Amino acid sequence: MILSIPDVLSPAAAAAMRERLEAADSWVDGRATAGYQGAPVKRNQQIGEGSPIASELGDAILAALERHPLFISAVLPNRVYPPLFNRYEGGMAFGSHVDGAIRIVSGHGARVRTDVSVTVFLTPPADYEGGELVIEDTFGVHEVKLPAGHAIVYPATSLHQVRAVTRGARISSFFWVQSLVRDDAQRALLFDLDNAIQRLNASNADETARRALVGSYHNLLRMWSET
Ligand code: NI
Image 1 (cartoon, helix red, strand yellow):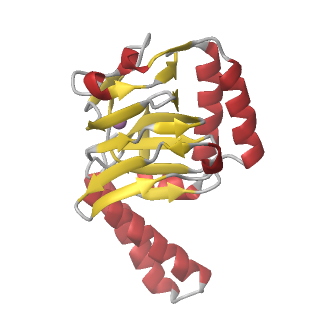
Image 2 (cartoon, rainbow, N blue to C red):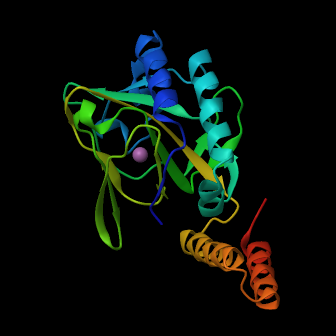
């Protein structure tokens, strides 16, 4: 399931974050965190993992997402890899790849299985040319370029790439989530069911039927989740 999560950050909050990142002196070659498959096709810059600015801004992004009902319903987060920040400019791109299955949190040792990939766009689309996140799934190829402060969540199992940025600079945050529910199709079904229940709640539909559906939701979640 590919889903955009609007308004994770206000435009002003995204701009303030971008300014802090632009001024930071901890940018390194993005290949520092690339794996066997990613390294040969990855050309970008990243804020060094574990640097104070990455921790501070990453915490702010996670706090905003934890308050976002759409994110919680769609992703069902269990463990989160601390957000990273990248920059593409002057023709930088990241060729087609699948994200590594397991990430080890730097300096911490915790392992996170990458079920869901998240990108939070921090630069307004008008400020750069190119830089689309291109995600392939069974329905074809999806090009994603969202307003500053919006996020996209997509299965980490999918092939994806970032097109070359040919004008301006594209700054984003990206990270991975280990979901309570590993399988994307099961997560999508729970998300659909939750949406239907919310609509029925809003329209004051038959309470007994709603109670049965809420019960089914939780019983499916109990069947499929791992903690
Ligand atoms: Ni990737």
